[in-house]
Length: 493
Ligand code: ADP
Ligand code: MG
Image 1 (cartoon, rainbow, N blue to C red):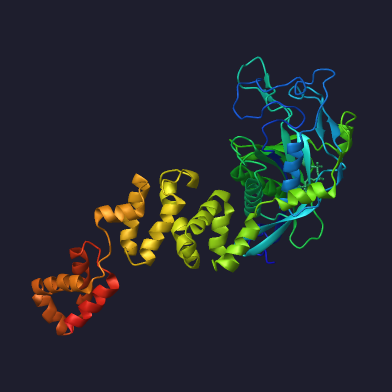
Image 2 (image 1 turned 90 degrees about the horizontal axis):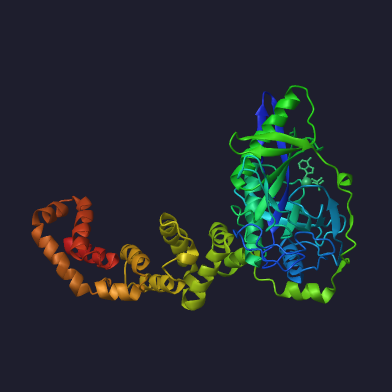
């Protein structure tokens, strides 16, 4: 497992430093209702319209665990190749903040629902394994709104009590690029599983980024800083870049690094100290007396395991093995579930295309991606259905249309949503393979260009291209190029 080039080294004078990163990802569980109440979780609702008495922490209200959220966490754990713990415990993490009406967050501390696992990243120079420390379930807090009024802060409790999965990685990441690949891989796995929508703009996926630096080759880790709550991959990368350089500056000045919690200012592109790092004991964790330990039995876990859909790594390996696609094509097709679904559907509806899967893959990753991009559409909105794309490829493979005409037909399919067969039929685009017909066209061209024919026969064989072009044009691009070439050469000599 090579990881040479993806390592991010900071070069200063003669020294070389290495950056070490570990992420605590907060992924919002895809669930209609909250972790301990029946309130809705819809994004963008009017403030304080999705708040039950439990979420507002009225005295005497008791939390009731939402089994669906538990299942989602187990599924995600399986997707992370992790150990599912048969016994886990919900703890109170105590702190005071206006958007936390309970005065504590229900989380899991010593006994999380999911233990160690791993994720494989495809980097340009090979695969890289990233260890997962744990995944635990916890409640989200409400939202304080500071910028609506100069005097007052408002509190929206819609998010209060929404289920989060905190996924903690080992300090295995070594560059901003690896962090990007890691977040994308987690998001892909969770989208395949339907356990988190991964929408970073809406805050469904955000991360605390732990960064330290050390001399290249050193076995020990440096002191880390934790950058809180970064909600885009770009910002994570910028924050790491800034933070790593800040720490190297301190070391070079002979100073030490304080372990602290920092925030990333996206406007100034810098990290700033928020507070010195809190320790676990600051939170006075203790098991929540309102909730029993969560006990899972083997059958329960096995049953979930048996219903897990095919995940990206497995799908990718299957494409390589069974469809003989390249590692690259397979990665591109499986990175997003919707794309893989589309590709699978083409082959499901047109089983005869399975031996030509590579051609189908090419049409999706080049033509389809490019036209969707240009129109800012996702593949789910594609006017060209999987069935129609399959039909188009078949028209090419059966020599009904040339590859060049196919591109025009493709554009027409995108504009009209019509099937390629209809378009070819209506516009009379069927490739001419009738040798008599092609001969007629060629004879015409040779007659009107008699002088060039003489030149050709005197040795100016470069003129072949000219004749091909003229004949093709006369056939409106429909002549089968192979037949056309053959006849031309025969006639000219
Ligand atoms: P907490 O932040 O709650 O104290 P942990 O000790 O579990 O929690 O560590 C949180 C994260 O910090 C993990 O993702 C871990 O990989 C990462 N981490 C730990 N040590 C370092 C380090 N020296 N440099 C970078 N990341 C680190
Ligand atoms: Mg932390």
